[in-house]
Image 1: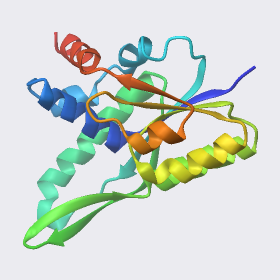
Image 2 (image 1 turned 135 degrees about the horizontal axis):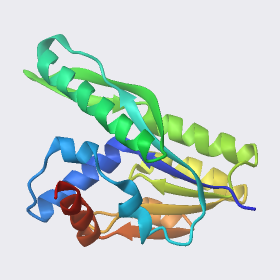
Image 3 (image 1 turned 90 degrees about the vertical axis):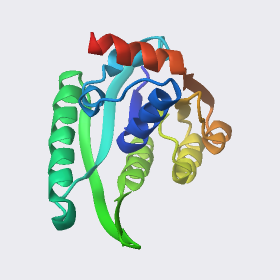
Length: 194
């Protein structure tokens, strides 16, 4: 019996969803993004896969003194996202941190550590023979060495990306690519606002 696990790079995934909504000229609501129904979104594209675990990875947010209101709002939004995903049967893993950096006179936030956690989980689960199929929803090329390693250990790797901007490197290093169409994302996003 196979052990199929879905690995989602949360920040990367939400960025791609926002990009699709922008391309489709749909108004974006941060609250709606926190409540997106992943079961409906993945139902057709992942039909036929018996997924045993669904893991959504995010970075830890912190209050930053120069942007305390925005930081606080983002933390509340992440809690709402967590509650929504846990209710949908996802494991919500906080790995790494979002760090504030001053670039010129502007504060820029950068996520660090999520891709490393995903890579470690992929390789450790493959080594422990707890993974036969990995569905990887991330467009981070940094994951390619981990993908190569687990494929050498006999794990099938499916890249789950977005038609608007698929990652060519992951397309070439995985066994198969499934792309979420803009129309699928738009339909699910619009249906939850009704």
